[in-house]
Image (cartoon, rainbow, N blue to C red; front, side):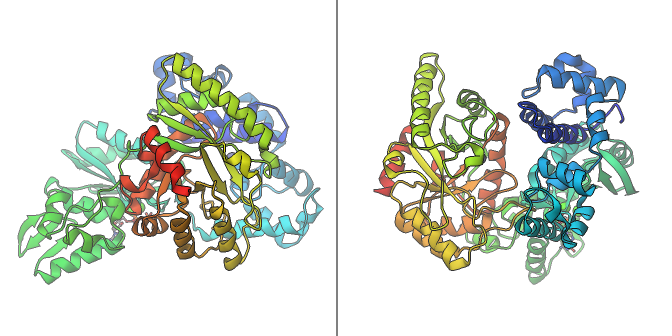
Length: 582
Ligand code: DGT
Ligand code: CA
Ligand code: CA
Ligand code: ZN
């Protein structure tokens, strides 16, 4: 192992450690390593640099990294070894993260696959599943075998695209590095990352430089760069250590706006703009907007849109879903912005499958700038998470009351609301009695099983849950996991009509591999006047950061502040939400 690992490489090792400990059934450590991995992913600085400048103290000081793990990081940075990791990997020499990225494969399965069938990676697993060998594994039936086959197929179909949540920290890290080069005059991330698309093919970065050649030299030497495909005075293509490719371009200052616009895309949006130019007898390319030889716009994106007689179109809307017509008529929505959320309506704690206490989650949410959160642990039917029954919810309610009192007395602002993530059964029934639901501040209902029901049955199932007068929100409606599990099949127009009739909120789950409901459905909800919420679905204190992706997705869905209920302050929110259903 090298001493100087990138944040992504460190995080991967920590994720592997978490899985390895889980295989061994070690208590606590899996959660601690997972939290630490997320913490490293969320860092804006290189962990190695932090260590070089601030020693072990700087590592220990990172939120989410405890003393023991800080010592292990120091071991890597000073010796190039992580003895405990190496010992465990020797016993289990398999591609853990590649295998666990398949739906239906957890750490315990990875261990059984290795011990019984010597399966090391996805290819081995595919071969074994096709040959029907998985049935040899304890507790494995035909059904699990089929599920794994489906998971692998789905994974391969997604064609190597990366989840935005896994990429954004790295893209922003690269951007920061480029901005710090002394020759850089300006720099920006372009492409699908700037449009906040849910999956990313490659990262595109643009810069203006006083010395393009020098800038390129510095870029290829960045620690995140693993391989250089090609480099020239204006364009460099590399593969990053995380496995994604990046395109880096240096453009002339007069062309900045035109280049940023061109390389932000989408391609379809670009083509539409170019057609407007042609109709007017102009020419648009990545160097500018030209009338004959004369550049008439393109120094900034703003002047470019203005020259076309269009309002400025935010990157998230540039997908040819009506944005150009709206910009022409001055009818673009005033999109919800980062920072507009005041509450979070879906938070899990160590009462079920979250990894932190209610109090810890409250602290983290307050630090993230929120002023209320609903505690929505899982319910009875999700026995594997320790789902709460009526008595459990009552006990939790008492703890929340006590915590709110204590927080108030100590001058803490954030308010805790009582809630639950109630499970929707196969027939649309709920696993908690109405009497208990009536006592909660907020009830979310969600699907966690029977993903394969036919459309009519699946749609009726969700609608039945919405018809329960206590259900305020449907959490992650389609239950998809991006790159992992297909969404359930529902008739979205019927669901939206029912949400409007029953005054049920539809959630935008901000967790980066859910983003559920997706942009297209958000737009339909906004048009139909169905209210939405943006929730983190946090299972750990650092997960509140995910709200960023929910807001990005909401913007892609043309949503404004008024469409999202948890932009309201808590008193107004509570006053609004209950009468909705009565
Ligand atoms: P990705 O990387 O697949 O997630 O998606 P993008 O949108 O980042 O696409 P990428 O990286 O291939 O190209 C970046 C932008 O460059 C793209 O959004 C629009 C522009 N672009 C690329 N190829 C073409 C093209 O053939 N025609 C036009 N008009 N624009 C293009
Ligand atoms: Ca791209
Ligand atoms: Ca590209
Ligand atoms: Zn959960």
